[in-house]
Image 1 (spheres, rainbow, N blue to C red):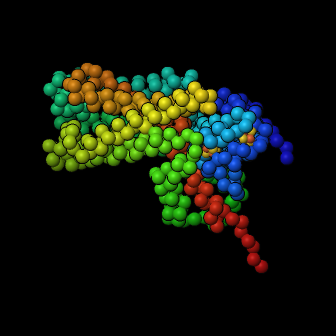
Image 2: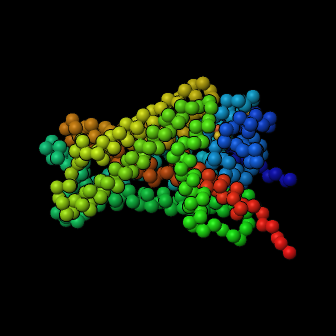
Image 3: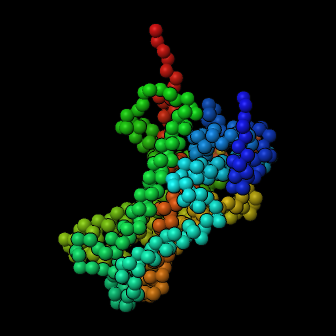
Length: 400
Ligand code: SF4
Ligand code: SF4
């Protein structure tokens, strides 16, 4: 086989946490210890070899790279200290960048050098909208107590659509739209590349219903139950952090949907439904419990990461820390806004709420290029794993 090493790719991996990859002497201990690796399709030894050879095309279309849950078992038992877990993380970060659209934004989100722009873009956009809305005022204590942040972008008499929601939608919906389109482009390309690499050339394809019921839904159930996370043996604390974090996002999503329905649909006919939720409202309770779960989860992952870096088992990378900082910023500013509202401090509240909007927009807008993308890429790889093991992934037997 004639191997053409991609030297730039090797350089990227080394700079993104995979600096130990050349230590690998291919003993395969990592593949044996990996709780998620199967006998038929073992990893991560082959990924270590491909990485050393700079075989970028193989790696970015390799479902095993995305199936890895970064538990660190392989790194713990590697006799050479080659840290395959870190190398796989570096490959994933490269892949999110490679599949990300638009390329400029993906590149910006890939290194700490882009951080001022990454914060600046949403900050400037939201600030401009705040100026355009004409709502740039600090409310009185009374108005703050009765409306909270619901008049951050001002208010108008048009009862069918709240001004605040109109302005939030103006920048949040395009952010989510760009992220979803980028993911759609990236994931369809990844799927095609994975199928081509796995030699799945069958003309027969599953129906949409079959795809959802047999491959996608079982993968989502596995993700929600954290079945694979629980198989890791050395870094068990990750479930303690990751599970509440995931449930917190689900809880906050439900509350956001309810809040929109309450204020912008039901509130049109029953004006008394407008306004901040009361503290004992079940959705308010869910919001607060989710916020606590989010802060607890991210704090646990933060500590976990710091501890493993101090012990030398993981490297400090922008890829890992950017998502931790982002989620922490969302949690702290969200919870902070709430507390400050209860304390009745409108000026400070408005500043913290502005920062909260910036943090939330960053989380959505940069989702396809940061570690957050693992939600979509891992789910796709898990569905592909089931697909390639089904009859669709088997060679067609010609009959006379
Ligand atoms: S990464 Fe470590 S455990 Fe895995 S094959 Fe290389 S030397 Fe062996
Ligand atoms: S980090 Fe965990 S899941 Fe990933 S390859 Fe290593 S042992 Fe397997």
